Length: 286
Ligand SMILES: Nc1nc(=O)c2c([nH]1)NC[C@@H]1CN(c3ccc(C(=O)N[C@@H](CCC(=O)O)C(=O)O)cc3)C=[N+]21
Image 1 (tube, rainbow, N blue to C red):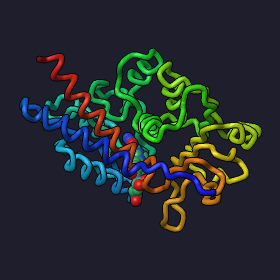
Image 2 (cartoon, rainbow, N blue to C red):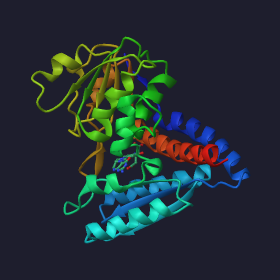
Image 3 (cartoon, rainbow, N blue to C red):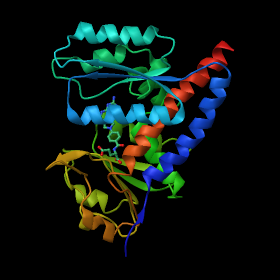
C-alpha cells in the first residue's frame, strides 16, 4: 500500500490562479498589492526563500518591494526599514525573514510592524486575534496545512490531530486553527518534553511533523491510513531532509511530498494575506 500524495504544488497553483483574478480586479480599481521582504544577512536558505516569494508575486501580479541588509545591521537600522514599510502606501503587506542574526531582537521588530501589514500573521496582535477568533491575517504554514487537508477531503471534524513541534510559526498556532468550530479537530501538541511521542502519534488520524528533526517520524509511529504532513526543512548534505522518514509512505493514507508539499502552500497563503490586506484597504477607504 502506498499513501496518496497531498500535492502542495498543485493545490498552491489553484490558490494562486484565484489570487491572480482577485489582483486583476484590484488593479482595475487602481490598487496594486505590494509585498515587502526584509532580509538581514546572507544565509543561503533565506536568500532562496525570499527569491521564491518575489517570483510568486510576479506570477500573480503583486508588486515586490525588497529590502536587503547586511548581517551586521543594527537593531536601529532594521527598525528604520520596518518604519519605512509601515508608512509606504505601495506596501500592502510585508515579512521580516526569520531567523534574524542573533544580535537582533526579533520580537521587538515584529511588534513594531503595523499589524494590518503583517503578511506572516505572526504579529502578537494578530495571534491574539486568532485566539479571540476574530478576523486577522492567519499564519501562513498552519493556514496552508488546513487548506491542503481540505483540498483532499481529509476529514477534520472529530479527527485526532497530533502536532509535533511547538514553534510560533507552525506548531503552536496550528492548534488554534484546527480547534475553531469550522474545523472542530481535537489537537495534541507534542514537543521535546513529551514522554512517549510514538504513543501519541500512533493514535492520530493526522500527524503534523514540525519539529525540525530529520526523519523524526518513522513508519512504526504512524497509524495505518493516517494523513502525515511534513513541515521539516533541515538541510542534510546539501539536500532538504524532512521530519518524516521515507518508509512512512508504506503505512500512511495521505502524505505530503517534501519538497512540493507544505512549502508551496505556505508561499501561496502568504500571497493571500497580501491580497486580503489590499482588499480590506479598498473596503475601508471606499
Ligand atoms: N518571516 C518568515 N516567514 C516565513 O514564512 C519563513 C521564514 N520567515 N523563514 C524561513 C521559513 C521557511 N519557509 C519556507 C517556505 C517555503 C518553502 C518552499 O516552498 N520550499 C519548496 C522547495 C524550495 C527549495 O528547493 O528550497 C518546497 O517545499 O517545495 C520552504 C520554506 C518560510 N519561512
